[in-house]
Length: 257
Image 1 (cartoon, rainbow, N blue to C red):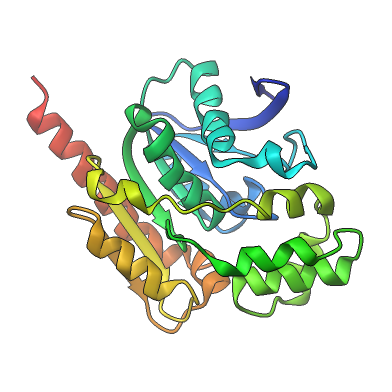
Image 2: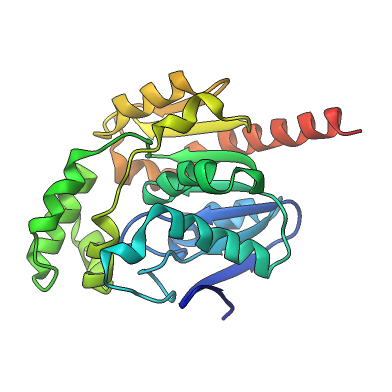
């Protein structure tokens, strides 16, 4: 499996399909197979060259356990390291939860590499839930699950619990303790931006707030769905996502010299 290197950290990735490049970035305590498991990759690879990334601390990427190894700037450079390894100058970006926050971080650290942003279950504002995680013991699986439920804002199923506990808990906890606000970039966003979220996601009000501050941004609301339920609702998300990406492509073709 291929890896790109950002300093001394190797970032694992996979490429599927042909067409314009679309980076797909998963959420906390997950890996890029979540996009496959929930059915997104099967549909999107018919239209795009998918670049599926395992975040540092997750999947088959390296797993530093120091919180300072998980700054937003480093995580954005992980994405650009993968793009550089593939000789991709600019790409569309799809991120969910932590992946969406990293998408906002790309606006601060590497906006020139973006063609568009599609961000689910994520906002760019300060989130006090993450401050409470510094008191948790990553050696204790029950504390880890409790911390994840605090961040998610919902209880997890036995299947989700099993998947969460497959992670390197120390590395994931280190990655959760750094969640800076990046809302200062919103008014200056110049790439097309599309957001999606469940109305029962504890982040929903902040996602609405972000949408109002981003010039021209659209928001797909999935009524009554929680954070985890929204990610699992590919049949509802994909038609709107594809419509957005097609509109971006059509506008680029119209305005290209």
